[in-house]
Picture (cartoon, rainbow, N blue to C red):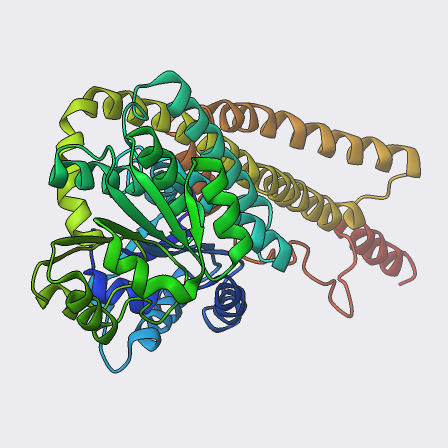
Length: 450
């Protein structure tokens, strides 16, 4: 796999929530940042993926070192004056492709096997296609990631049980109360994650109330889940009545502020309230957790809960990793075939060029008619084909083995195929010496002429 394939990013595995939310990129900003990265980091192809738990660049570059420097500078610029270098992971070649496949399959998610990430990867790829920042290699790589994600979902048990951040939030709410039947649950936001939570909560018998900036979206979700839509202006009143709040909006500012909750607590007469914030950037001011009888859980807290589900799916993880290895082998074979064609063409040109150059040096010394000259040229071409047949056959067959890349590199090095071809035929001197038999004849003639 070419080392020109790169993945650089920050995720919940390497950075705390406070840092991740500063790096989170909205749809409009993602397009703008990707176009700037393509130019600033010298990328050949690029896709920028931003989710609640990761911000990653998947790219190809002719000069990987420059691309890495430019991308890390981008991450640092997002959190300046703080530096994020230590939190940025870097993958190259096959490791980069493996990381992409694992992300698409949900193997690198906070909630193992969660299906939402695949949709987010597809959206990021589609966005890059719209911007024209992907070419053949990334297209092939992403298509293989979608393929292996589908196989993992259908051929393993990785997706069994509750495998989304939203469903884990519902599990946490159920653990807090023991039973959600009849409990009043407020959903703040009507996006995809809230939708998943609403379905799960409705199945557990909770009374659902939905608050959203768009009344139409709130109404649609409430109707689909047997809940009640409320206007955004009623947020304080609904917070005062709720037992559990699950918040997931796309706003960059706090939706539930400290001052708002301070007033709500007085309205509640300090009855316990559990708030689960599954948004990144966060919807709820972290200081809210210091208020009396308010218990706030964020994405980092949910990570701890999700670990309990891991043991039950360990076998599925092994099966998923095996499928990923199969798909990586396929991608690597394809990648080698892409490199093989120009190498074969260059090798043929180099060998034929050398033979033709020697022929061109020899032909002026022979006084041959055109038909004899053509026979020599045909013989030279036949020699080139016979010389190349064995090596080219071996080179093609090797691409299906682990030695293929090494042999390809050896051929390129031995024949200096990455160097510009020098002229094999030196220019004829201004005054070429006469052939030896012509000189002898001239000497004899002079002798006879005395």
